[in-house]
Amino acid sequence: MIIDTISICLICIGIVFFIGGAVGILRFPDFYTRMHAAGKGDTCSMFLILLGLGLYQLHEPTLANFLVFGKIMFITIFIMVTSPTSTHALIKAGFEEGIKMWTRNGEKKGNVK
Amino acid sequence: MENFIAYAGVAILALMLPIMYRIIAGPTAIDRIVAVNVIGTKTAVLLIIIGMIFERVEMFVDFALTYALLNFIGSIAAARFLNRVNPTKSFTAMEAEESKE
Amino acid sequence: MYRLVIFLLLFGIWIIFSGQFDYFHLSLGLISCGIITAISSSFFFSNRSKSFGTRLGELMRLPGYSFWLLWQIILSNVHILKMALTPGEIKELDPSLVRIKTNLKTDFGKYALANSITLTPGTITIEIDGDEMLIHSISKHTAKGVKDDTMERKVARVFEGGGQ
Image (cartoon, rainbow over all chains, first blue to last red; front, side, top):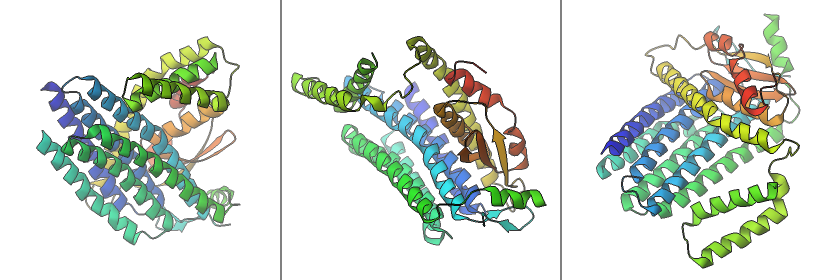
């Protein structure tokens, strides 16, 4: 019972953070700020939802369920390590492409030669 | 509890729609790639949820793992490809412009 | 010594992924892990001059660092959420580029610092160039925050033996 409650809480918080990421991707003004929302919201909501699902899997502790929990944790750690890396690769590609940057005083500056 | 997991899956699916808008309307190519990357991560989560609904998690978790791997490799490949088009730019130009103000 | 560690690591991953404990599958796992260790063991642990004790120390300090990082990730998500759900014009948004210098020596240390900067509130590493990092920061407040070197000291303590 306690495990079920904890996993429901984790999944709900994960979905709330995913709402933040999705709204951020939709609303933020330029590529770089959208990247903030995408990289961070994605990592954290994925982590919380998968943790919740993995804990729910443990409600009857058999060996097969433990193996599935181990696999889910492996996916989680894998995405936690690779998501900032791909964020970094994509934002660097965009930066060298010369995409314009949005600033407060309304003008846009890019990486022009 | 099964119902709750199904609802969570529907919520994730519904939240993919605004990101889908970014894929269609995104002003640059990299915006679209970023949106595809986010949807890909969420699809890995969705696959595990589908496995829990059909009670075949031990099978679907492998799909999710493969999907996460392919997603990472795909985004890195796209970034490399776009990088290759414009290989020799540095960030000094942008900084010079900033310090001028 | 390193070959044995790599072999055990690969075999553990095999057991988690196959999930079957009969002799056929275990022997298949033994054979394939042995082949992979023989062919490509030089891919892992590129710097082999470190002693085994240092590695163990890194492993012991890793959990504390990752829990701190987890807390930072949650803080940064609350930050993004608050910013995204502001009605009307987003006042806090004020992007700028910041450049910092690191004292970290090893490549892996720099990689860990760049990933940590990406995951903490409001900052993303764009480029690592030698010992300089170019950082995109989302508001004035976070641009100030990235300049103090708490995180760098934490990373140095975990991955470079506290030599700072």
